[in-house]
Amino acid sequence: KILIIGACGQIGSELTFKLRELYGDKNVIASDISYSNLDVVNSGIFEIVDAQNYASIKVCVEKYKIDTVYLMAAMLSATGEKYPQKAWDLNMESLFHVLNLARAKFIKKVFWPSSIAVFGPTTPKEYTPQYTVMEPTTVYGITKQVGERWCEYYFNKYGVDVRSLRYPGIISWKTLPGGGTTDYAVEIYHKAITNGTYECFLKEDTELPMMFMDDAIKATVDIMIADKDAIKIRSSYNLSATSFTPKEVANAIKKHIPEFKITYAPDYRQDIAKSWPKNINDSYARQDWKWKHQFNLADITNEMLKQLNKKYKATLKKSN
Ligand code: VAH
Image (cartoon, rainbow, N blue to C red; front, top):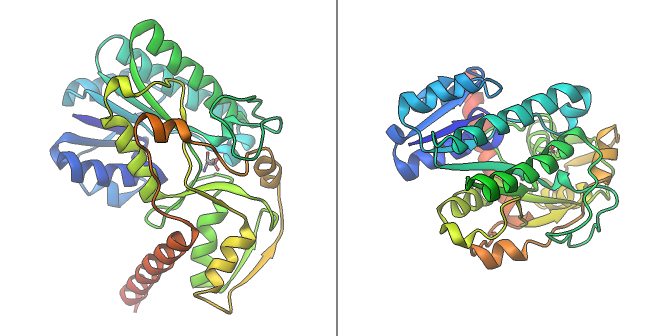
């Protein structure tokens, strides 16, 4: 049985739908700190679990005889800079609780997301290698770097089967992202349809590694079903699909919506984005467990505009 912690979030929600499709509704328990995503809450078994409370997680694990946990709860980079202590506490306490449940043999397998945020201004920005200098300048990035060290330690010391991916910015249409620096790449599609204009909080030439949600979910499922000894990296794998700048995604949108206008008003998130790589070398993931991405910027733009148009038309109909 599978437990998803943070199932109401941007990745957690789509992971819930996909895992239910793959393993059956009865075998996938969704959980979060509140009922903040009714699609998830009403789509199968849902429990309130406080990721910062060991007993809260353990009760759920024992109630449903969970053997695999996907820990998707975290405070992301932009919000983490507003509440550094809370970001540290949430991101680290939740990881320790899940790793300790695995160490105590209450669960067998763990997925824990890292991020390109583990890299910092001194990391090579082009085709960033798996092994390189990592001096993250955000609290979120620090929690991900330290979390990777603990995942590898629990694997080596206690044999905990924890697997991890350094997600790039993730673009999706089902659930809005929460508090990330890459969120502009989701907002821009919504605004292109609803406003026809978007004021971007990053500079036009800020290139960042990005990935469509379907690719991110595929990578997550793939690494978790891979044979144990195919996973040679127990800190976290670099993972990549594409990378682009705000200007490039605006131009891709203009191919569908010629009158779309973008303006730029960089804020504190520009400093965060500037500290991250432009693009990532994920050759170890491609070699060890056959990772392959599918969606490039044109595909992402097609899919986002098609799905969001449908979504907005449906809500318009309901409100008439
Ligand atoms: C963030 N979406 O912006 C997350 C992610 C690589 C970025 O970690 O904080």
